[in-house]
Image (tube, rainbow, N blue to C red; front, side, top):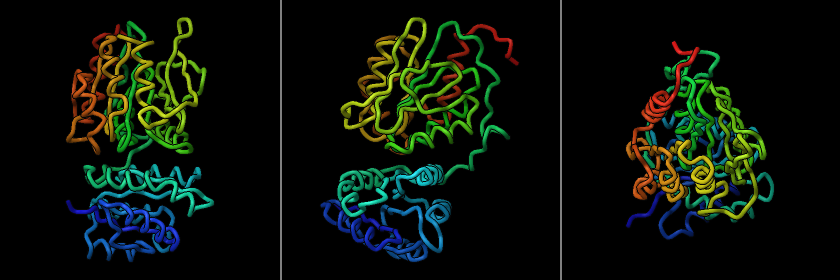
Length: 359
């Protein structure tokens, strides 16, 4: 079996050395080159034809985002971004994912040598996932709601006869897949609860970015707040998120706890609460991601009367989580990403009453 061939791109000689060492320790991968800036990297990529590159966000001469934009337009390939744990780093990283990067690793601002060694397993696991990911040229830049939205969004769903909640689970490739679903929802859509595997420090920026793109309001979930229609709630990085009932209302529960299926937040935690608390009023969506987190809980949702969708293989960056949900018998429909929201809206409209807002 051939090794995964990796090129490291980082302006720090220390980081290049550490990443090279971490990669070369693995029996199934090798670092075939280390570049100090994008211009050197461009020649390496042309001459060495790597399977994956790791790319620093902040570099001299040409920053990582400019380089990634050109790379994905001219020669799409798997990229794992290496970003800093800062608010600015989070914003730039989300832009990188929008441009087509498969995933990212958040390196510490201080103690970088020890920090990267502690992250060695995460780094190498993400390189393995990236090597198998489905890469395509990025879509057109997404417009904010203030102008023309990138998709034709229905003006209204109508008055829902029962209180519905949409539950979304996603991992690798999921930031853009979730965006695709949310931007297609009208302002009167049911509440949406989302668990996306992300580390602390990134979900607040992610929620803010989506809030500027969607007709529904998007925010990071807060413990104890009401779950309201026309709003989407994202599990905070590093904390579990589930729903509970309080009288006639649904409320968010956000808490610390042990990882579930190696993840915190875990899709399993959110989806199990959907099965237990929301039952037939729940709608589940499993999007692209590595592993099996949430598959068994999505089957529990179906058994409790929920209606579930799974993203198909052709449009998933990584087909792990949807495939496991499908194999568990959890999905009613398996659809290309762009068809999930239209099918969902049609299903909601079929159970909705007339609305004064309908056009």
